[in-house]
Amino acid sequence: MELPRTGRPLNRAALLAGVALLLAVVSVADEPYKKMLDDPLAFSGLETLDAATSDSEYRIGVFAPGDHELARGVELAVDQANASGGVKGKRLRVVRRWALDPWGAGSKEVIRMVFEDRVWALIGGPDGATTHVAQQVATKAHLPLVAPVSSDPSLTHTRVPWIFRLPPDDAAQAEALLADGLAPSGLEAVGILVSADHAGRTFAAEIKRAMEGSQMTPVFELVVDPDLPDPGSLAERVKSFAPDGIVMRLQPTVVRKMLAALHAVDVDCAVFVPWIPGLRLGEFQPGYDGPLTEVLPFRPPRQCGPYLKLVRAGVRRHGAKPTASMVYGYDAANLVIEALRQGAVGRVELQRELTELSGYWGASGPIRWDNGGGNRARPVLRIINNN
Image (tube, rainbow, N blue to C red; front, side, top):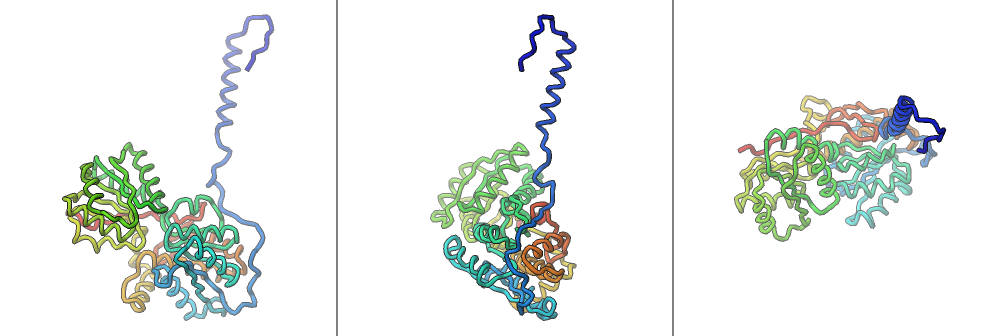
């Protein structure tokens, strides 16, 4: 800034006042007018599915294998709704499609559900990567998508108003692991083992961010091949760091191999595991002597009517209590069913009704959306083995 040349000495007080005013203006300009999550999600675009008042049924799409727990949960919810009369006299039908190559043939199956089957909403997929396939199609088609399994933060942080996520995201799980597990334990040498896939990379970023915020630096971060061809060598490498704690986010089958390999080389330090769909950590306890702690996406609300109703139905049909994936599939379908009962006559109205259902009490407990469409439920830690 060039000061005017008057030929007279500058007044010191006036100069200081001018500088202060300039700094105040800059300071105000640096403050954001509003933040991304200040406003609730809203959509006022064109409807892409005609009001299906003449249809004889409501179709709910599921992008998952038929034997997957989330698909079983959806089917139970739909069967229960049909047994009680459906929605406004119409039956509900599950339209399930899947392909072993989600990014290739799988994306085509999602497109067929949207434009051929004309489903009202989409539920799935069985992991973070396949959920992104569904998200890509749902985003462009303005189709409501409820994600029962993916914990990827980017799924709802993009704030697409017709995308909803049920599990706590990786950021919330990492914060719970740190606050309720790593920090209270007083561990000093904590390493990270993650898979090389999308789920492993996203969780690694969040746990490192959480640790750095508490001035904790991982002693190692190792990316593990999904097939884990030589678990013994990897276990020896981990042992060389002399860890007193390990955060492990691997594929369910690889967790079993890795725990056994660590035990074989006398590494029995504390192990912390986020929620990994398909993993039943308690089953591995006999193969590992160190403390095992896992994140649960929700605390089973044992006195909750919807949860008890699902447990009875799950045991009767499948002979076992529901997994977290089944619970979330069940809740996802019931959310869509309840939104239809509230009067939705198209996809846009269905999205709006889903948004208004924040506070809905499902089998997983209360479901409350943040302003990105993510469930704000707080994960909890469970100690499997505390020798």
